Length: 95
Image 1 (cartoon, rainbow, N blue to C red):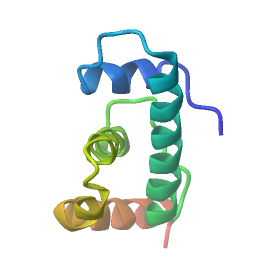
Image 2: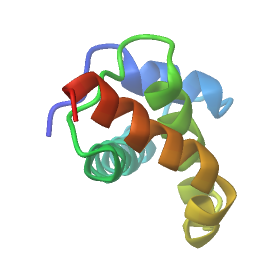
Image 3: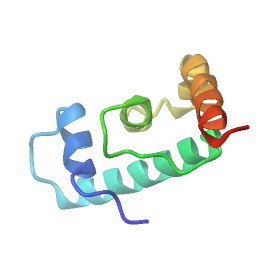
Image 4: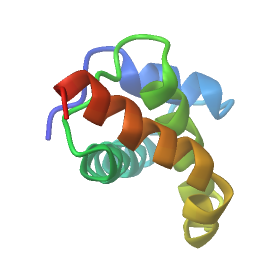
């Protein structure tokens, strides 16, 4: 899955990763791609991660939890936001 342009750099900035690490970037790219698939599946639609909005915010936090080896806590801590995302996506889709 190709990441949207600039997304890796945005996540690196959010996570305060200031050093160059190609292997780390590859690992982080995988985390981002998995997070995008997870959020798209949760929302029931392909989301836009190129604009400052709830999907990007949730993706950043997903990556933060994944890097901290606390991914199992993400869904519980963000349940309200994930449900809101599902509802918003359903309303936009007309159903």
